[in-house]
Length: 268
Image 1 (spheres, rainbow, N blue to C red):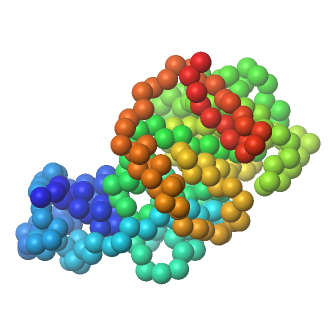
Image 2: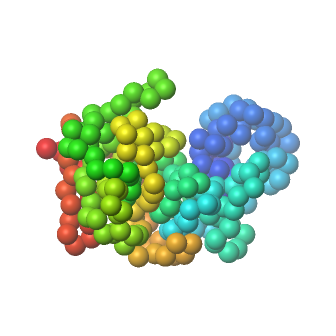
Image 3: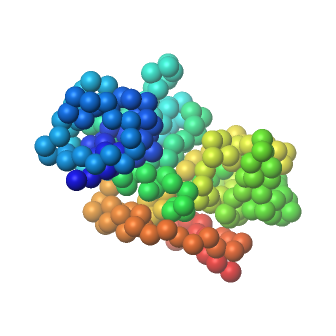
């Protein structure tokens, strides 16, 4: 027997947190009865489970890395008239993004139908690093970069980066203009449009934002709109990291590798 929300996540219906919302909303039936109790136990092999009157199907797990272009939504939204990153992967697998990017942001998306793994990758308590190349207007001073890691208040929340460093003027995605600067920023928890809000509040609005890393997964030279399957080694690394929570570190610092230009957060 397994928890209902876990079975829904394993079936690729939704992430576990979204599955819990679907259960609470009365959208799930087990053996003909609506179940709204979170944590209800079911047997996926013998129980008949329906979501929105449709039976769930346990699919083979699929894992993709995709370079989301600007102008695409990360996930399906029936109320919007935009293309989605999911449309870039052929087939009828019920995939969803583990960690979204907004419409005007670009870069690495991890798409999967493994809801349990997706939940662990996106939940802030597991503190999976996400790394971004951010092109901002102006030339931020050292004290401004320090503000990004100390944090700034925004609409009742405290927004902060784990690590910030200036990147080279030339990046694989383009060269910074005369009054622009590339920054490399690491987060472990990304609130909606967090980097855009933070940079704008400090007088350096974002003109381009590209995610280049999620934990051990690298965007690399994957072209915009292109995708590839995750390797067995990458999946194993993700699953290993997802099994344990990372303790919060004191003030982190950036280490830049000349080999692959990755910024990593390490304790002082």
